[in-house]
Image 1 (cartoon, helix red, strand yellow):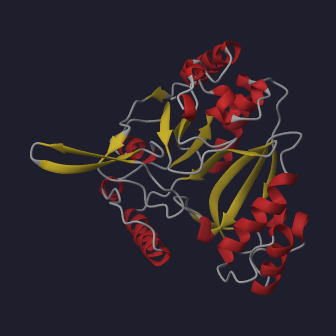
Image 2 (image 1 turned 90 degrees about the vertical axis):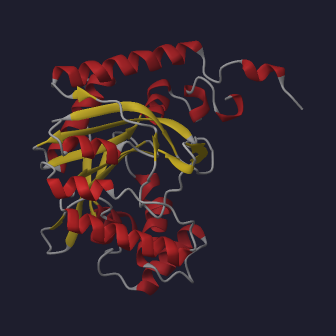
Image 3 (image 1 turned 180 degrees about the horizontal axis):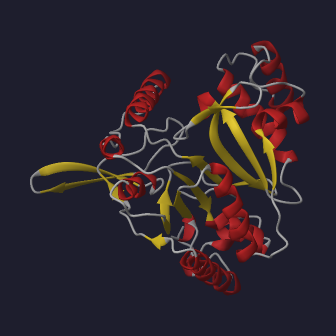
Length: 324
């Protein structure tokens, strides 16, 4: 039955004013650092390769052709194409879309802040994120930092690089009642991380988790840590039980990017996921040369939830999904 009250916003006007203030502060922060704002497309004829993210699609007919467009899950590929033609350090503040379950922290449409800093590595970018949080929230905000390996050792007693499959299965099962039949190490590690580690980090202050396993590199460069393990130059930021940001010292090698696309495609095929057109134009752009840089995506709605002390993402959106 139609509910006449659903015309009203899901967020209070005071929160929407906070949202406008937050946008202004973000733009002031990057303007002071001479980082250019860009505005790339929401619809693309090709999509991301990530096997863990499902996309929304739009079908249309134009000039005698049936076309499938993909709504962007992130402006990453388009922004990297701009980097490859010399755009310099850039940022974007805008809407992105993901076909996932909606809940207290998830919406199919949300606002993302993404930026790329030429000449930065992931360590320097983490420092800039801390400076951004200080500018947006309070100068007293200080971030802590913990390696992926150390987080596992501290909270589970397991070394994620050397623990046996059986010990990972047992740990995952004890924490979540799942995992005894799972044989993929990364799936088990992700299950343990979400069930055991996430609830224990970043409660009092934001916490960076860095140096992920190479198998979880996504679009990050690889290097060796002090123990000789191959790790991804990647980090995630957690605060009060929420993942806020995901960043990389960006991969710039076109051949390696193409190989990772192929690996993702094979993984999607094995899992029975729906086929989709990957954006090979990113590989072509990288072949022309992308400057050394670090990039990060930060969830603005979740950050606003923390600032306004809200427990549901609907409370910081003008019109949440049931009111859209």
